[in-house]
Amino acid sequence: MIVTGAARGLGRDYAGMFAADGASVLLADLDAQSVGDAAAAIFETVPGARVGSVVADVTDPAQTEAMAAAALDAFGRIDVLVNNAGIWGDLERSPLLETAPDYWDLVMAVNLRGPLLCTQAVVGAMREVRWGRIINISSMGAYMPAGVYGVSKLGLNQLTFALATELGPSGITVNAVAPGPIDNEATRLQVPPKGIQKMIDGTAVGRMGTAADLFGMIRFLATEEAGWITGQTFGVNGGFSSRL
Image 1 (tube, rainbow, N blue to C red):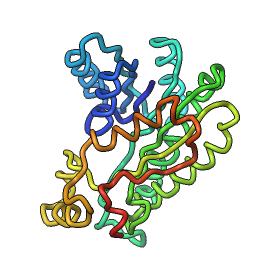
Image 2: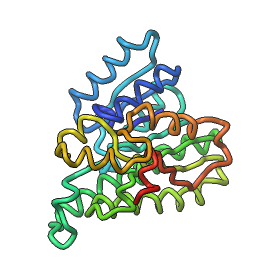
Image 3: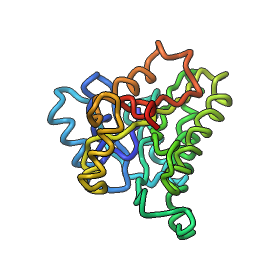
Image 4: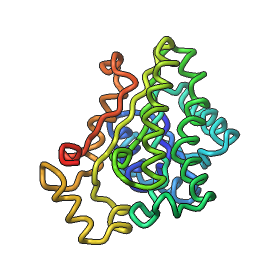
């Protein structure tokens, strides 16, 4: 399997948890040093883990093809792709009417073009065995005023639905997971304490989520049992969506 954006944060967490479950995992990221360190840390933490790393810019078709080839060389097949790589950005301080065209293009390239290119790169291997699971990491920001980030994630939900329709006959499912407020380094760096408290107050369960909270759904969507679920976007958000 491949997890993109896996050098740090949630992507690294997902890769580690899949490895702990016994999966063979290729970590892909733009940051060569960090993605190599992440794979090494998982190998040290999980006895017998089958993990590797590759440098890949998900906006570059040549690099996504090379990423898929590296996974095939290492593991012989690609069963699962987790499209996690993304740009969060400055949500509240970047109104759409003030968004620079270059920034728009960058966010769309990483958050929307990237998942498409990665899917195109792996789908041939999945079609050969008539089995595959593609899981896109969306966001509850798709349903909120969240600038270009929200627009890109809503587009990702539609991409998920469209790809599911095309790939269903080949035995490949495509779904998305839309996290709510997550307590991790990225959130703490970009959201002030008052904003964090507002997020907590906005959930039904009264706390931020964690990587483990998200992983249960991601792991299920990667299984044989989830074979009749496709084209869906699942909000995993502690009841945050019920209060929007």
